[in-house]
Length: 231
Length: 245
Ligand SMILES: Nc1ncnc2c1ncn2[C@@H]1O[C@H](COP(=O)(O)OP(=O)(O)OP(=O)(O)O)[C@@H](O)[C@H]1O
Ligand SMILES: [Mg+2]
Image (cartoon, rainbow over all chains, first blue to last red; front, side):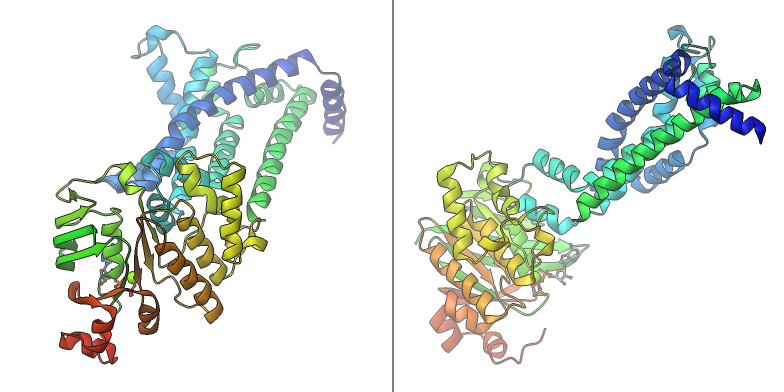
């Protein structure tokens, strides 16, 4: 009990004092995860929209693969990325292993099926009759696509938040491919693991509070958007 | 009279089930054509083909002198002269106003002072002014159908296809919608096809009437002769309410 109280006290001290180490970890986390999220959106949104709109042979198989991807153990993705980017792997020449780039690759692979899956569900939920009506009113193919995305906007927001939540809180893959190098690839989750192991509970708790706060803020934003949508 | 549509040997199949089989049919500029027929006859399907939302399985649709079908589709510019108000009105999840100006936005049109006034006048005529800022999914059935018609009229299409525009509506709403249809046909270069189950409505609105039955066009004719002295036995049966399917 004493450790916890002491830890919390230290955490508050570190956070309010804007400890440079903490700031660095937050900055690496947000930069890496933010970049991965952008890639995941760039891949996942068009893919999800396409899967939600178009029927083609083999779509069922493809969808099943996507759902599998949504629930794929991130650490296994980390393993594959590790193998592909290790010195003897096909992408070894890039020298990305244990750099932020490797983390971005892993996190993108973890997040894009989530984004695609949620967007697909949202797009499939749009009334076919409505799309027909828009086409009849003179929408071109591109305009139809844009209207679809706008109509599925709530689902798309959920998709982005879910994707972000999944990768900001992920630890196994990041540890594997990033190597938890101080100042470079040390992110919130891997730092918590390290500090806890070394008994530096104050720092660990401080980082935990920050991670929770980020998740909390995201959910507040999402709930607000949802309410706007319902009114 | 100038034909807008000329249909020849038009077929539509869904999973090998033939839904439409029309040997020939013409629709003319300046007329309101009333399309009647029992449920499942293929009326909505014909409208989708006339609006080029679906391709026919076989046959030709000539639209304003150009032949389409067999993989040939009109360009967007041509398609934008036609619109359908669907049997189930579908509005976007935004305000009524945004719904009504949507087709103008699609065409990249500016909604400036003059245009805005025009639209406001249209809404006024249709009793929609007070719902302008209301979200479309909060409108009543009658308001929804009036809004859908307003949205179709706002960009002045040459061809207006109406799929049971007043089904399930009260006399006031029916009155407003029929009045708008009658006014619209008076404008230049317009053609209206209205699907209706209501013989009285067809009498009130249409210049010519046609009966569709199991995908086939049984008979078309001037309103008077169609109702008073139909040529086909099937038409007579339909008009007397004996034809169920
Ligand atoms: N996409 C589709 N796939 C398979 N069958 C279809 C499809 N669309 C329509 N049909 C069938 O085609 C037939 C004609 O349908 P349609 O909607 O054109 O009838 P309708 O005359 O408009 O009927 P109602 O008066 O009930 O609206 C029906 O038997 C319907 O089940
Ligand atoms: Mg119908």
